[in-house]
Length: 359
Image (cartoon, rainbow, N blue to C red; front, top):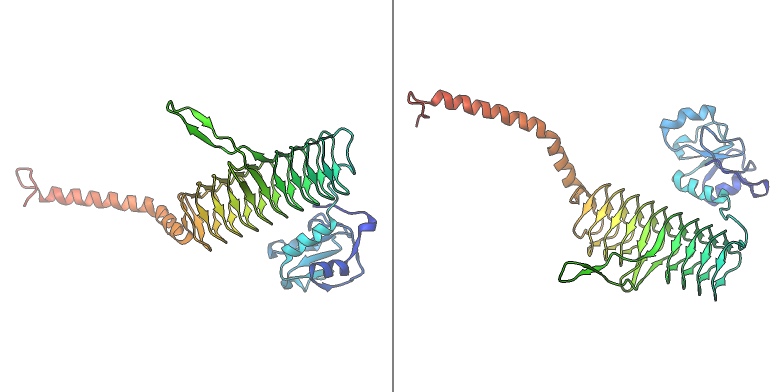
């Protein structure tokens, strides 16, 4: 991490502890100006220790204070003690996150279409394009080379990184982060075949709607709906290189790791977690709080509160039993070979003088 803020943005350990709701051990007046790793933090930075495997690094740590769970309260350090140190770290890091805007204001090399509305404090980088009739909310940053098509609405305090494409008519809520190379609103993959088997394109006339506090990774793609909308609901986090097809609906506070692919018209509930490279067939429903392990292939609906693994995806316990049996296959093969040899030797012993097996 190792980002530091300016002196005027420094905070006391007491202020940080109050913000992250942590118990303070040590000097509450200590000024903190950033966050660093255990190995690299300076005396004016905050670091963290969560796992006992890394406790040996504390002896050489120069950080001014540490975020730790209660198990480490005995350390001879300024401490912020909390039951959820990862959450505390995330909140503290937000306090010290450097502003990511490339420029303050509208760069003269950007393109602004007709009849657009920009809120207070909008930043637009060089070579960014904002099409006709767009609305961009207060405090939003549009990075250099980003493309915002006509009639797009982008909410307040969004961060649209360089070279993002948000195509016509799409809607982006407040505090959304979209990373470089992502494409929002490309055509869905919709075709019909004629009598000669040729693919005839179905015009994709819907939109993509992204609700507040969503984050979308680099080079992710979310296709517009054939009709209606593809919808990513509040708080969902989408990793790099994820593909979400037309008319998919994703519930609140879900999280998808890299290379997930979701086929068209699938509905996913709230708090769904998908591991890397999960593939989901179209027109099925995934219930709330479902967790799917990496590389799983999902071909059917899944009930809420289920953990799924494998290809095709099955409940985790079933998959573990199957995998345990797969590991036994070499031994079972050897046993079958030995049994076959015994059967052949018995048959030889039972043969009569005429070479036939005795009755």
